[in-house]
Length: 351
Image 1 (spheres, rainbow, N blue to C red):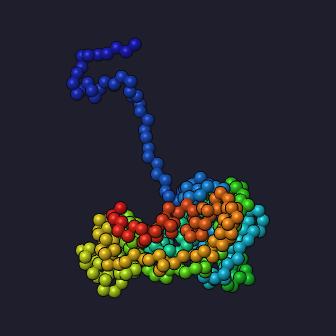
Image 2: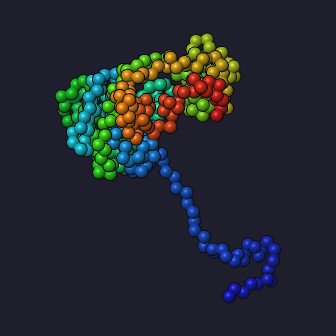
Image 3: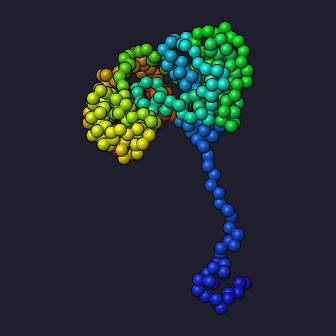
């Protein structure tokens, strides 16, 4: 039984007497921070960052490697070594740099160094691909070998976020790059591991490709602000001049209309970026679907034949989209990014 003392009252009593039902020794709560790259250390985290379940991570990793190979413009080859090991090779220029620099490319901790803030209707949208590759290898305790410019480089992604060079040996491989991937048992085996890569390769070179510049109609205010800030110390005008319909004298008119003359990209706040985007849209025109290009019907000939005979199974329609965007999990795949040039021309850039 608790005895209450009413001899004290006022603020002093409030400071000295404990309240009924309260813990006189409350726990100390601490806030823990987790950096973005740490999500790539577990299968669950890689799923979250890649946007696909663990059952599809093997095929996504190989498609990421294949997309990089296709970006060289050369023909690629790929295949299976055994149930858990695969390779992708291209006839491109090879990967430049010392082994340690190549290891850094496959590091989950490295900054997202990417030109993909400048949106274009090409493979890839987030620039996150090699971190997904390294994360899948780390989380599943797999293996990674890069063969390029007469060197065979064995790499190992580490828990601290860096990837280290395990071994470098001579290799008779002067042209191109070969990537050898081994998956650990934490990633379920997939009988269609090469499917997405096969479709991406089949679509490469088919149809008409867009060869223009990035359009101001392909950004909202937040993403355009990120693009501007990535310009660092360069003048705002030089960045604007890189956009479709905004080059030459128009760039100066746009910057003047936004009231941002003589300002550097790194100085621009969100409100100013939205104003700049609006001014750019007033000078430019949306990219027409015809100019944007596309894969065309030939890119889906196999699916078209199966559709005529009623043989498209569950999940195959989703597989088509993986040809167009770097991964099914990317938030802003081509279908999302570029459709607004046709149906959302007048959207509010400040959204």
